[in-house]
Length: 491
Image 1 (cartoon, one colour):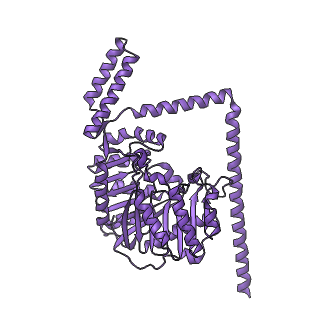
Image 2: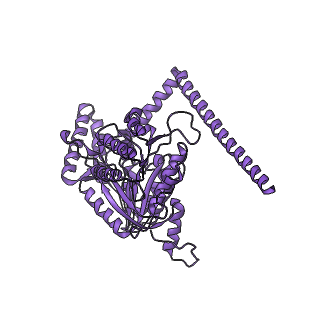
């Protein structure tokens, strides 16, 4: 959370050792001399993004998981078309799965006709490298060498809610970046562009190089690709080093055991650990898995809150009022290990304290989840046992459960606290039902299982052959280049 010397000596202060650990964990250098500002919710994002795009003079590099064929999507596409027609270099990178059903290929025809370029990350087919399950989950924008954006917001009107139907806007967070960190953002985009075809020309790949200081803020740009786990290592390290507070917001929290244990250890050590997640999610199954993981956190002293709005989509962390992270990475295995993600880790007290104030404001629209006191658990259990002995089943049990849900709901409305239910039981039932269905299908219709498995095996074999062919071609080219160099030296 502090700066590091380049070569720490044995008596280097602990904060410098921690800084070196941050560099190694994140796999990203600390870049100084930047300015950063917060963007809160979709409307602020879209206004800032479109304003920057419409003012572009040289280049626009836009990467996003979802582009939706709606009013917001058309506003972005039309702004890009206008700039491309004016001679600005426009490059758009989208994810195949994220855009599936959201924006068909014809959506981009006007931009292509104007001279812009659009590429799709990891479409179906034989993957030459990596897994076809990997997604480009990044949300970034670079305009000229002047301004950059990193966020959790997609190009979709869904983020604006629906006032006519009483649906409030989604809650999300992003940042505006200026200064030398812009070149790191360009390099991250260039790596993804090269992964989908020919690399960016030097005129674009060099954008932001030598950008003068725009402020005094130090930050890291963490651009992860499958299996690199930079954000995961950083999140683990922050949980280990936090001394006073660690406040997290996440849209799709599914904590893996090592990270849950890190948060629990911090809470038991006196750190004020808080987790803000959606109360209602656009992906119901993820919400169920998230709730199934509340209990070990609550038992360790971590405070868990559920957002009361339509969807809480922000992915943020702030620790000790000195360090903050904002970006596209969720606290789950897909983001940490499988996807291409992009985040900024800001090491500045002023920015971190602003993040804390925003987090406190968010909690005003959230309900805290609490454990049932032990005496209440025992009383509930003994009552259930007596009811069973008396033969009390069926409608009376359902009525009791309905009454308890009603009491919890009313209590949450007045106290902003909700007693944690048995979410684990629901997830276990779903998993058990799925396993039973799979087993029955394998017994009664084995070919329904064998054929898909065979197809996956053939796909994997073809992928390995394609990858082998690529390696063989590279080795052949390297050998040819070495041979040419040898002839030149001899001449």
